Image (cartoon, rainbow, N blue to C red; front, side):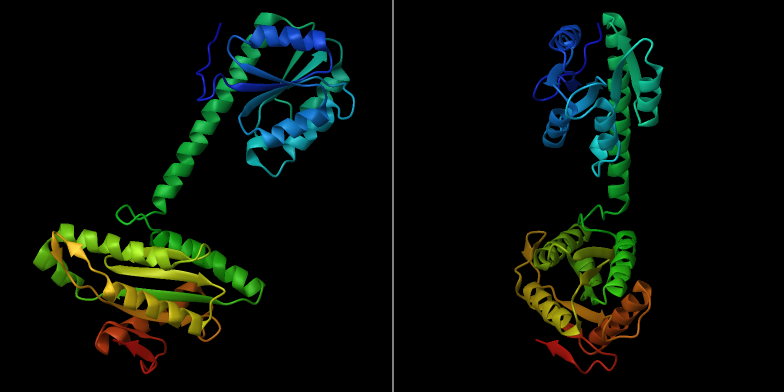
Length: 322
């Protein structure tokens, strides 16, 4: 007999939906050596279990049951808003000559069928096959998700990277347009970062980047996004935030970094940053690229005007400095 890999809480869980105690006992006996069997007497009870128990990995269901039939349960599973439910393997039990129910179940999304009376070896073979197939698909999806996450993450600071910034920025801008909301961008650069690398070494430079990233992340709201754009440059994407609100946050970030006691390579190293900001409501920008370019020009002005300051307009006059 196939022996599945036990989960942290025991064997993989299968939901058996069957109103006949005799059939339920038989199926449970056939599969109990490799799976933990949960039993529901009808589709309504089964649906409640499915929505509450994310550990269920496969469903075996009869067709004709009170309260909610197997067909109705199958439709609810396949139309669920939750991906884990939509993708559950479902095996339907039918009688050998019940082609109508079998065809309807197939149209509703059944993965496989098994006929009554239940043959032990056939049941085990079909359940094992669909369980292993579903497990492989989940592992591939998780691997794909992790690769996608890595492609959007800066490996040093663990912040989002430039690609993620533009991806999220385009979506945030579309939402801002749709709901007539605001969207701001804050761009900052570590002052004299090359000097930190040259004087204290690249390891110290990396430590500085991580430390600044952590400060920025600590200032961000749940809906904000902090990204490392490359080198010593960082950006924050700020939904529903106007120019004034962004200026206040930028000044908080500037002061927090200026006051931080950075220990790099065993030495205390003062660090300051220059910042440029832009907001959709105040600046003529149709794309996230244009909004970022406006912030970039103001960042340049902040550096040109002495560094360790923020710049909020193209003249560089409205700025805070230490």
